[in-house]
Every structure is written in structure tokens, then in C-alpha cells.
Length: 370
Image (cartoon, rainbow, N blue to C red; front, side, top):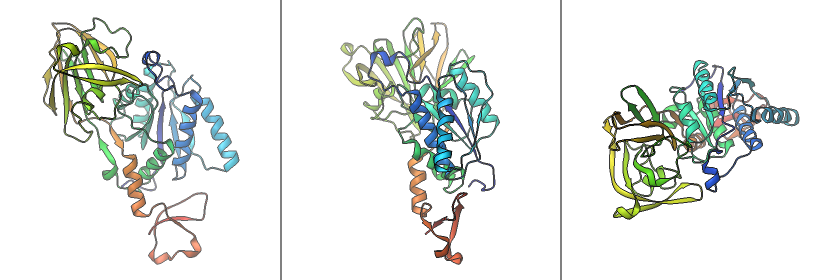
């Protein structure tokens, strides 16, 4: 359990450019406007503030999220007399690239924030996860494909973060260690993916987003859920693997006409592709394996990044060293069972039989376990 007297802080990395890759042009992906991104952040901050929060460290941006957020929070404070935390924008250069998320994550790690909130898709989560160590993170899905971040209303995420940073629910019951796939190239490059590593026989990276299935040869998955969209939907509709299972999945693919079976899967919102299945095999933790494709491009969580040739040595390994995530539903469910949301007026409290969980800063009410 976390100590109650520690200053409580969270970090926020809100990517203003997630969901704006090329897949939006060839699919029916949702485009979340800047004002709504600011509204999402506002709901989380106000929600966590109800549990007591001292400071928010936030990634600055030129996309308009920061300016809209500050204006919204001033209105909140003026109209509702909300006791809001201090907002501090991180001192990093703004490049309007993934480097902003990376630099922000590094600073949040240095500041030892209690939790990190991420607004973005799989790519943004991957960048941040590489830098924040074991600081728990919560997610808002605002990307094109969102296999790693689950869909939750922002207010509920703020509640769960508040429950965690105040020690109201046991950390060991709501924190989940995720799997990753490590890709080593010639023992020189070591990159990770949170959900999928795709091996294609493309000759160059080109547009980073991966959506053309005819060049896909091998797919390595940390988990694959039937309800997923993106590369992991191939495994999810073929042989599902949960986030908590201690294994992953390897799928070898080819043209549908050359295979005995195929899967028609949603590789982007509103975009289906038929993928031929050559084989599917369990991917064991801590058991390195070499890829079979002789040349091509490696994509991490749906984005092509590394080109390789026949003479290169590419090794894949599933590991249990991924980011720690907060189980939103579990946190709230445990708090409900504890009676942590039940309020009683002071004049009705039996002081000898009351277990006070926390005292609000703006009210004479107490939250008690019943």
C-alpha cells in the first residue's frame, strides 16, 4: 500500500497527432479532435483531484491540447470551486514527433511520479513504456489501432488512478505486468513491441503504418484478443492469447490462395483483409527464436521501422518485462466491495466503529468502509 502523506503526482503524455497516420486515409478510423483530447485530460485531472492530487506534470505540445486544457480548468475552478492540482508543463523541446513523448517519459521517470496517463495509440504507448520503468500507467485510446490500450471513459480512469495513488486499494491486486517482444538485430539493436512484431518482405520502410497484408510473412504476438483491431486481430480470430497467459503466439502467413485456411480480419477500423495462414505456434517466454524471412522490414506495433538483409541476424524473444498497467475495473470493484465510496455525515458517524479511508479537502464528509 502507498503511504498517505506522500505528495501525490501524475504524469500525462497526450499525443496530439495520434490517429493521423496513413491508415486514416484508407479506413474508417475515428479522428479525435484536439478539443476532445483536452476534454479527456480535463476529466481525468478533475476525477483524480477528488481523491487528492498535488501536481500534474504534462507534456507540452503545439497541437492545442495544452492551451485548451488550461482554459477548461480555469472554467472548472471558477464555476465549481474545484480544488485542482498544480499543472506543470515539462521542460522539453517541442518537435511534434514521437521524440516529444519519449523525452516527456524520461522526465516523468526522473520525477518519480505515482502514475503516468497516456493518450495515444499502440505506437505512443510503446515509446512511453520504454522509458518509465515500473511506474504504473493508465491509457486512453486515441490512436488509429488501439490493441494495447483498452477503452474506458476518462472519468473512470481518473477514479482508478486516485484509488491507487492514495493506497485505497491494494496495489498487488490491481497492477498488471505486461509482456513484450524483444527484437535483436546483429546483437546491436534491441527494440521492443507491446503487442506485435510483423516481418514483411518489403524492400524499404516507406510509409510507416502497416496495412498491406500481401507482404506479411511472420507475425509475433504478446497477446491477441478476438475483439482487437490491427495486426493482432489475425491471431485473435485464429488462436486467442490473453494478456495474462505466460506465452505468446507466432503466425506464419502467405497469400490466401496458397494456404489451406485464411482469416478475414479487421486490420484497421472498417478495413478487412483476408490473410492466408501457413501455421500458428505457441511463443514461449524467454526462448529466443530466429526469423525465417531472409530480407525485408520489421514493424513494431503496426509501424515499420527497421530494414534487414539476408546476412543480418534477427532474433525474436518474448519476455515478461513490459510496463505495469492499472486494472481500471478491478480497482473500482475492490473499492466498492470495501465500501470506499459510501459517505456518511459527521454527525451520524460512530467514531469508535468507523474506518476512515480519506478526508476530502473541500467537505466535512468522510469516506468510510461499511
